[in-house]
Image 1 (tube, helix red, strand yellow):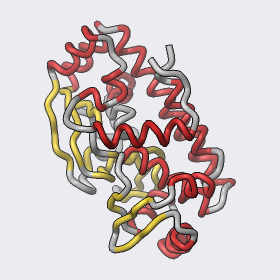
Image 2 (image 1 turned 60 degrees about the horizontal axis):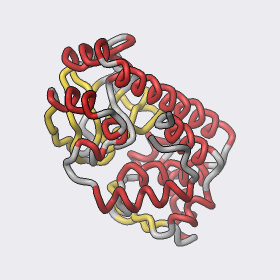
Image 3 (image 1 turned 180 degrees about the vertical axis):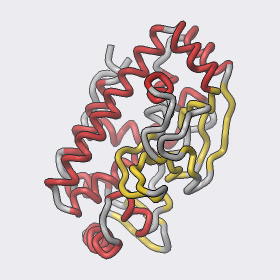
Length: 253
């Protein structure tokens, strides 16, 4: 398994991932980290599923009937009130899994899971995956490591939302999305981003406008294109590197 990655290493991984991503389950980092026996047993009970933009995969506090390993899609975990999204707590893409931790702990979703970038995920029925966790210690250990990284993402993001500027927060969020999209352009509306960052659309417009003026991104008709990755990294805070390190650590021996 790989050691910790620097932000520069993460850029290299991003470029390589863009070139190699397909419907191979091993394009998901968790699945790729499994030994052959555990990998074969896991994918044996899986099927590919196409997930559309803004699909509500699970509502907050509802039971999980399946676990999803994103391959080309990205999901947002949001806190809701009266069924409406309030603020994003985390994003999960090809580096992780959705539903595994909840299945082990409570069998209910921590929040609203919304498809932010459409694409393909590997879907595994809850009962089958629960049996895997019970009988495959290496898989269980990897899921717990991912849970730690996800918790770190939530904690770092929560602190970032309190102490850093909107431009820094916006740059962090765009970098994380760029990593998980594994392509330079991805769909995004100001309304959706306001939910992600928990602010008004006018505030989002000012932050993205500053990044656009600096030449780091292009943003038009609900589509963002990252033009200058190093520039975007220079605009964010240390929280982005902290989140990258947390996930890299999850794959260390």
